[in-house]
Length: 87
Image (cartoon, rainbow, N blue to C red; front, side):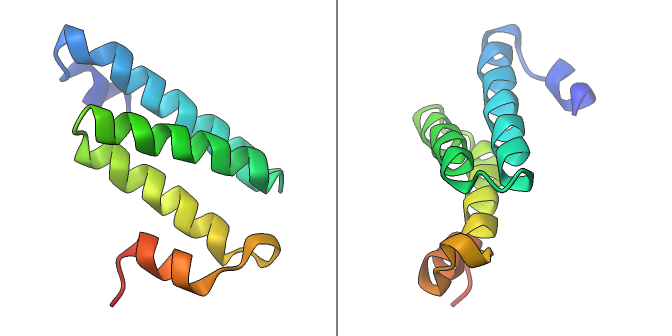
């Protein structure tokens, strides 16, 4: 959210905005059922989160990928389970 963004130091805001943008584009493609494109953007957000040690970004990207793998077109129970953190 914008309130959370304001609380981030100036140096991290560009990274945060980039992460939100990647996730938003991933969401758009997911809901448009363009799942391969959605996966690309969620994976980019995941990589950015890992590079910047942003647990929140990693969590959000993993949730997006987990959602994709639960959809019929890309259904993969093991990947979805791993991304959602179930045992």
